[in-house]
Structure formats: C-alpha cells, structure tokens
Image (cartoon, rainbow, N blue to C red; front, side, top):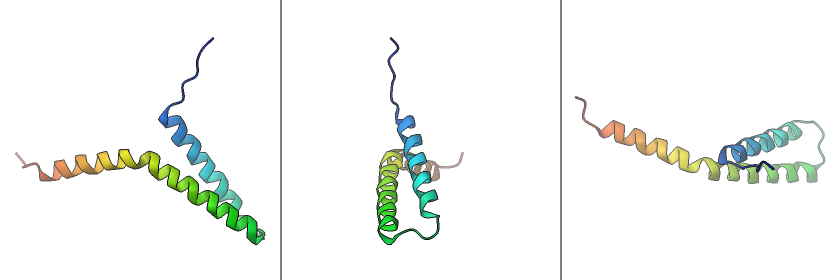
Length: 74
C-alpha cells in the first residue's frame, strides 16, 4: 500500500483554497449579521495560519536580499 505524505506545500495550497472559499462567501449580498461575523472570524484565522506558514520563507528572502544589498560591488 502506498503511503501518502503531506507536505508543507500541500498545507499552504489547502489554506489558500480555504481563504478563497470564505472570500467568495463574504462577497455575497444580504448575509445575516451573525454569518458575516462568523465568516470574517474564519477568514482572519486562515490568514493568520497562512502568515505562520509563509513567515519563514519571507524572512529568508528578506535576509538574503539584505545580504545582497550590503555586499560590495566588484
């Protein structure tokens, strides 16, 4: 039996889909106030998770760019 491996990329992609799904729901008109609040809370949670998952990549790119900026031009 082949084992399935969950990767960080898989999780990032899934969170992206969850965010898009909630955004589409929020874009509908005449949402009841409690559903609107619930969807906004879900969206905020998903965005926090997305930031947590992408934070190390963003930090690495920032550090690499900073190093490139301080290297003397030869």
